[in-house]
Image 1 (cartoon, rainbow, N blue to C red):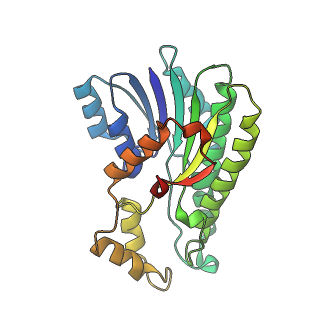
Image 2 (image 1 turned 180 degrees about the vertical axis):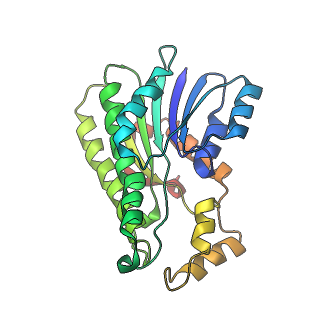
Length: 250
């Protein structure tokens, strides 16, 4: 049995990843603020193992306990363990001086602090498992390039990339350590993209470019992106990858 812990599982890439991984020999433990009834229905149709935990990742104080709960759902010795930190928020959008402090705090909590705590708990709580263990942090080109109006999102994703580099270095010296990567998935046709296109130009000056991406059919579907991500995760040379990568390089 291969075990996957996936955050942000009720929509977008997370939802597509769950659908793709719902197979007989897999256990999928999903985390989202609300359950996805169609995923539950699909799991029943396929006779697949799916657990859905409702949790708001902005509540950082309960994340170690959340990891404990995810692990408790493993009913047998797994063949591999994979944590996919996918959940993310784009807000606040706007010049930094106009951003509400609460929205800044939530952005960093979901985009950076939650993946850090979950990764830390994953490594600590599963250190005795002598099997392949992977952490996949879903990053963004925004962590590698500045976008006016996205100061919180860019900062969170840049932090996630560099955190991944550090943990990768740490784990190299650990026997049977965790292999961790931070991967940018490209531009995907998700609800986050819809939110971006609803922005005011004074808040996000590149909005016309993102509107054109949609008009010109330049957005990848969540389903195609999920397939590419899984190909990377399952590739024979996964353990040789550098810590920070882009799915479009594969």
